[in-house]
Structure formats: C-alpha cells, structure tokens
Length: 148
Image (cartoon, rainbow, N blue to C red; front, side):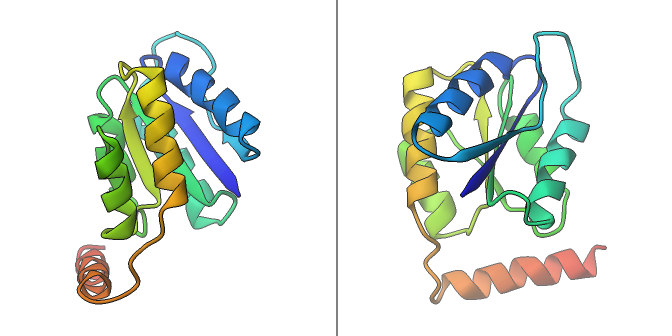
C-alpha cells in the first residue's frame, strides 16, 4: 500500500516523523513535500496529494499543516476526495468506517506518539460498505456532480 504524505512548513517536522514510522511499518511512502521549514502555502501541496490519489498512484493520504484545517479544506475541494480533520483515534476510525475518507488532515502541533496511533488506526479500518453509509456517500457524490 502506498501512502502519500504532504505538509506545509508548520507540518514538516511531523511529516518527517510519520514518514519514518510508515516506512518502518512496511508502507511505501510518497513524500510530496515540503522538504524544509521555509514558509510555503498549503493549497497546492494538498492538491498534489489529491491528484496522486485520483490517479491511483497512492492509496491514502495524510496532509499536515499548522492546525490541519487548511489542508482538510483544500483536499475537500477535489472531487472524489474525502478528507477528515482528525484529532483522535476514534475520529480516525469513524472517518474511515462511516465516511470512506481517503485522506486525513492532522495538526503539525500534534504529539507524534498520538499522530502515529491515529495513522495506524486510519490505515487499519475499512469502510462500512452497507446502509446507511453507502447512501450517504452517494448523496455526497450527487452534491459533487451538481456543483462541478
């Protein structure tokens, strides 16, 4: 499984920690930047991650910025991307099981131990491919189609 990682300057440190963690766990990691602490804006970085998911070059994505909020907003602008801004292990579980998220957004200020547990849970869980969850995903797809 390939995991895409992206971060702005405020998420760079956590991205580097998670990259090593994922590699140690046997995942192939596609690092889409940034590669230092120099200031950079998150929207185009988020878009690059989402493109890799849509092109099936990566399976799931992890996007990190100062709060995670900006990355989540940017990712969710791309049709077919479902990004949850995750703060807890339970949210990581539910964003996958109930909402079929293919990206999670994290705060770069998050404790790295907690972030590792969140990522582990997100990658382990599966979408509940049954009602009412499937009909909700279909409703989201209809909203995307109406608003192209």
